[in-house]
Image (cartoon, rainbow, N blue to C red; front, side, top):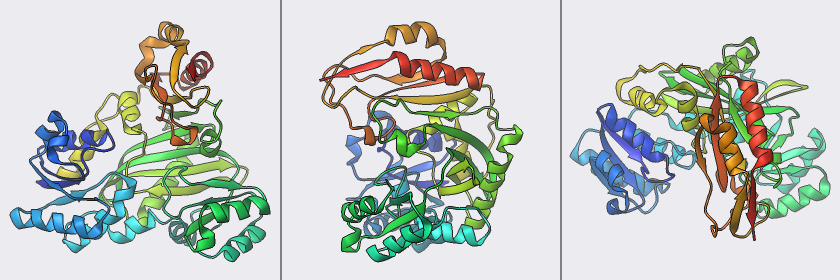
Length: 406
């Protein structure tokens, strides 16, 4: 099978999808923004052909590249795994008569207000929401729904460009900061109180073959705005417990309603005083290399089974569910340059057998701002058979490790 894979070099874990495609027998044709000789030797060894384009989000450029490939060989699949690439790839896929995620599905998984409207009409409990380019419509939404509300780009991923708004003054500041005053589109949503998590799948022909539930501690907006917090994302190995039944059922309904066929999915949810509420879904894997956490927790290669789904239309591997696993992000005390660490030896001595990966940038490395995300500075991935003990270990790592900067 000939599989065109968009942007094999960035971000770093894109290489894992290319590796997996090659492992399961695909002929891999890469399309990316870097010259081929800029890719490392290992990635080049997994790619059979390569097309360079100025931008993989330029629909015309990508379309021309895929047509050039089709002039040489039959293309069975055209795949992408990065949020910003999904809709462009879907449009080129349909234009070139290649099977895969439709433009409708990709659009609904990208445009938050449209997504919620379709799901709300189908009975999925969602926050009240609005997509608009009109500041007065935004003000009216706030008056009708009441504060707090959330304002974000219509096609946001994660917490990028997202504000919690608590009063009229903050709304006016966001209208200016988001350029809504100049007609830029935004999504407004009712703020949902409660615990935040996500439900991820590998879905094949509309059927979930692998599924994972992960919890945020604390919720994302708080984590991405507060320096002293060492935020955690923790994946459970208790997915079969009754408490997860409702979120698993919701995930299946959302996938059915949106027409997701063979794809990774990433669905965010809240649970609080108003019950379980859908937040949003992406037709792609989660960010921050979260699939590496799933691989470590379940002692299998999820990338390989994604490639099996793409190439062979089925999966073969079985997750062990032996471990819960998570990642804790560690922030420097201030912005500047890293000068050193406290607590690393203690953490290694106490928890080293359970640590599966970590990153501690060396002294002199420029720090990244808090809002840059979970992997922007230092981080640790860790696993343990008992979820509650894992949470305690992660809390201890956050308490003990200190990153000094000047």
